Length: 454
Ligand code: PLP
Image 1 (cartoon, protein in one colour):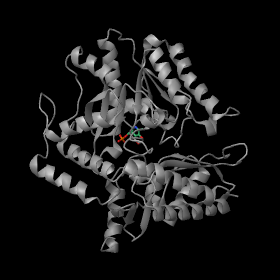
Image 2 (cartoon, rainbow, N blue to C red):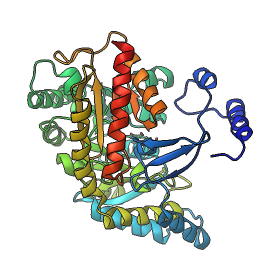
Image 3 (cartoon, protein in one colour):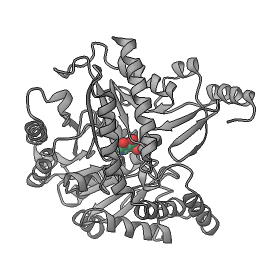
Image 4 (cartoon, helix red, strand yellow):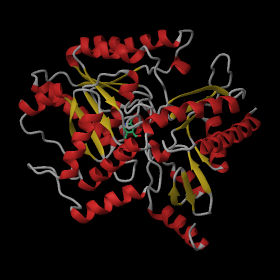
């Protein structure tokens, strides 16, 4: 809590005057007043009004190891004192970057042995897409430029990332770049109609194949997809989907990029979403959980078959960032991976995910508003519906979700609303009693939402 109530008011006023926020409607923000987060511990945030809020989103899906980890603070401080910064351009390196690259090669699926570092998920996606195009140029196929993504996909906010993603509002504002195409997402609840999830998984994968044939495989560089589409509403593909995508990319000579920015580092109950679904990527992008969000870091892992071309035949790669391989970020990532391993957080995510979903089903499964409770590990969603039987959406899309999200926050729980789907991804360290608190707050908020909209 801020010592002086006036200090909080001052911060709000200064924020309104000087701070232009990401993904924010500023008129609405200024009308409501910004929430000042002052400290955090475990799975709880504290705000300037003295409220304790359970962070059911681990920040932005990233605080895997929980808040307040002194081990990470010390790793950063020690590295800062020793070597706070040096770049990795022009034939230099540093020990944390080397050791992290090696560690990532050990824990990612076989063949992904080469790490390129950046700061954000968006930069990792940008780097992977550029690498895909340079790869094909180098192989003498410069026409292979088109990137196929999916509707409701989210691959970050740089212009390439926004173009690869399938968020209509972002395309409208940012301008859609040429050489991107989008296909149906494997979103059975919303798009599967009368098909079984398994049938729909194959159907949705074949939409990718149809698009490749329509564009000409000789013009397509890569397909990019999140193992589970997080920001699009935690869309979990049926188990038939990814094996079919593996086949389609291989047969058509298209690079497969798994965007693991949310799914990576234990979130799905496996180290990577690719492990969970059996995805065989040529490149993998990762960020967020790599440092539990304590410092910015992202990476692209290149498969040997891509790296060989890039290393042996591409000449100089005209791409990189001042902070690529930042020693402090890499040192924190190494310590964070040690915590994830030593504390068994990957297995914990699987076990606690089951408990959380079972308890949610018991508490709110019968609510007329709740259409589906879905999840894998500790990423999940409660999809609200106007009609449980037909899976029908609401006439005014997003209204019920927004009411519900606001009630969640009022009651002391952060979950995000994606349209009318309430999504959650708590820290992997959440305890069973904290799960009970989360479920009780979710029930209270969903019951209040029903009273509000029925
Ligand atoms: N890719 C995915 C799958 C994401 O979910 C995100 C962010 O949520 C990004 C990329 C972009 O990451 P960042 O916000 O760090 O640029």
